[in-house]
Length: 258
Image 1: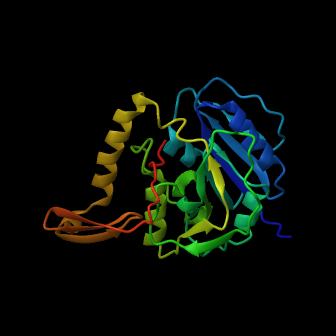
Image 2: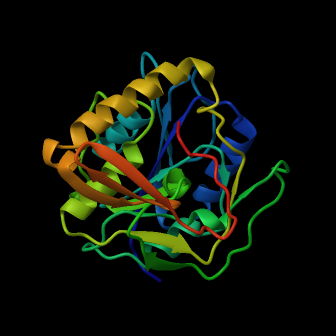
Image 3: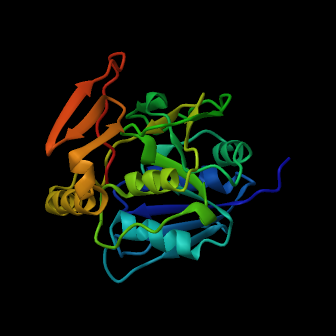
C-alpha cells in the first residue's frame, strides 16, 4: 500500500449539506486523505465530526477560483485534490487516483463520459478499476475532481472568480510541457450545479470570460491559432474564429462551472 497522502480542497456554499456530509464521510474513510480543507463560502459555519476536516470560514464569499488558490496554498501535502461539493464518489477514490500519479504529470481530471446525474443521494458508485489516460483537451466535467502535485500548480489570476479556473490550470500544465490526464474506468455521481445555477453569479461569470480571453489570447493568436475542445476544433485566422464540430457519440454535457 502506498504511503502517499493527499489534501482535498472543497469550496462550498452549503446548498446541499446532506451530499456534502456524505462526501466528507467517504473521504474520512480513505487512508490516503489526511487533510480536508472546506472553504465555507456560505460564511455560516459548518459542523462535522471528521478529525481530518478543517473548515476555513472567510469573511465573505471568495468564489471558487480564489478558494482553490487558498486551499492549495494551505495544503500540507505534496498532492492536492480539488473536488466539487455536489458529487458522490466511490470508496477509496482518492487512494486509487494518487497511486497512479507521478510528479512529472500535469493535472489529472475526470473523464466526463463517466459522470452520471442522479437524484437519489443514497446511491454509491461501484469501486471500479480506475486508470489514467492522456488528455489533450478538457470536457465540461473535467473540473469536478482534479488532482495534481503542488509543484506544477500555477496560481489562478485573482481577477477570475468563478469560471475558467480549471482551464487555467490545464493550460498552465501544458505550457510546462507536462502531460495532462483524465480519470477513466470509474463512475462519479453528480447532483449538479448547486452553485453555478445561482443567477446572481451570471455577470461575474461573463466578466470572467472576458478577462480569461484577454489573459490567454495574444495578438499573434488572432493571426493563427488552433485549440481542441471536447466537442469541436477551434481555429483563429486573421481575427476570425472557425469551429469544426466533432462527433461526440451523442453524449451531451452541461458546462461545469461554479
